[in-house]
Length: 183
Image 1 (tube, rainbow, N blue to C red):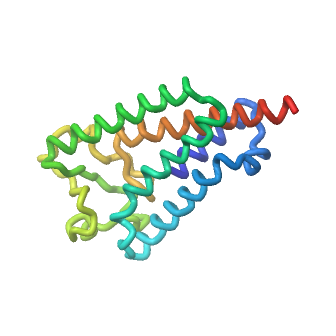
Image 2: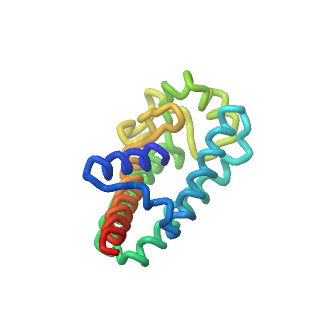
Image 3: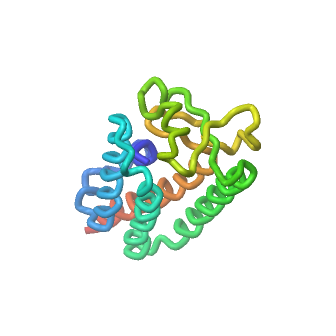
């Protein structure tokens, strides 16, 4: 989710918010710690170390749950409801494509082959029990993982789920900056 975080920071800067006080925002510490761990997991796959792959799903859930701290502190109820809608929509999209493809998420890697993030063997070796290689027989390929950013391959559903992170992080930045200006 590093790309989502960086895009949120860029959007906040364009909108005139300063990020210098963000390091003082303790409610975001778990969020950033989980992101660092996810980055370590992703880097390990570049070196062929796949022992963390089974834990990635649980860590991503904890990562999203870590946004509850700023949610309650800053009463981000409207943003939370909107963001939750994004999570539900993204999850439904992912579940639908998986349902129509035998319970697996088809993946169409391209750039990740060049970066070394994935190999054809990884998807067929059984290391990853959720994903399969997409091909011409894939049903609903427009909902499959086809957005290849080199260190991850995303689906439209994944983009929606990341919308929650964008909304909550941006709302926290807005509240943190407002709070700092009022003092």
